[in-house]
Image (cartoon, rainbow over all chains, first blue to last red; front, side, top):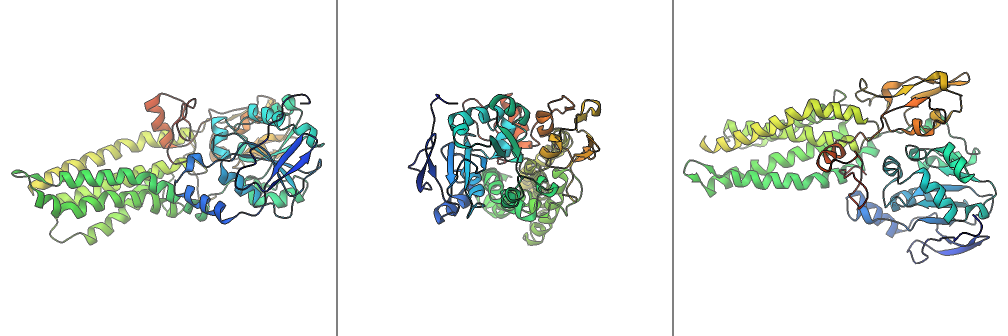
Length: 353
Length: 104
């Protein structure tokens, strides 16, 4: 709005290469090409490193040499989202309007409403956008729709909200066809690659529980006749460590990768199958002298842990519903808890075997 | 996605075709092709594919769509038991009630 204070993103961010003058003041310019530093940062957050502080300053940026007719593309201030958008724009001129989603991606932020109608209205005004572009149109990422009402944006800001494609990779085709998305561009997928890039964060996130369980099992392995024996704990340590870590691998790595091929709809059921596969490997590799209670304990822990770990992958998936997950948890968690309890009892009892 | 379908008998999505004006918003925002245009109105063609994200309801200006929306995330649901907050994703912060797992 004319007369109100215009806010601009900081110029001292490493990916800002200059600035461009507009009727509403200068705007930082960012290149479409990513640098090595952008790529390394993107890799690190895929492993969970610095993930919640990987942000860009919200506000309006320029790619290329945009003018009053150039499209306005909206994204979140998670740098991975921002980079995914600009790297699809080589040779193009566009305005990129970054919302303050506190470093969260578009889809999750839309679920929390930080990528929301209020933010659209406020950000358009703070950017002085009505002075900069004549078309009064915003291209919003489709996955922002759970948080943004396009009719309300129109009413409150005067800007027309057009839903862009789900994937930034489809933006060039979308822009070239006059802001038209094909039905295919509107569908989320969950390809092997999509699942693969999610594995490191899932794995790293579960590793703490796995290591904790391994430490506890190793310690508990000494319990038996004569109260406690360190040699007994050490002798059982390989299995005590292998079982929980195998459960983590089965739940957070094997299940995501084999997702379409594991049977059933429930993630916990898929994880159970991955756990069975992993159990076979552990049984084959276990020393021949291992007692049956220990082997059973390991299998029970792997099945329960893999099933639980897989169930937690629902949040990373692109197609599970709240009520579906609630139903699944209701059905699966009693079995998962029972499995963990049986594993604990057998493991402690196994000291007397 | 044809080979990946989730539990579909508890989906809360409801569509009142009588209120539909054919604005097409739901067919644009749904990431699973749940709605398609048929003549001058939308039609609910794949209710079972709904993930209850709520995009259609939020963008329907005519009150034709209702869904109890939320995130299909076990970690967020578990977190909501402990902090009695809304089921939501992402890190805990000063004014967000949800504390999810690794999903966001």
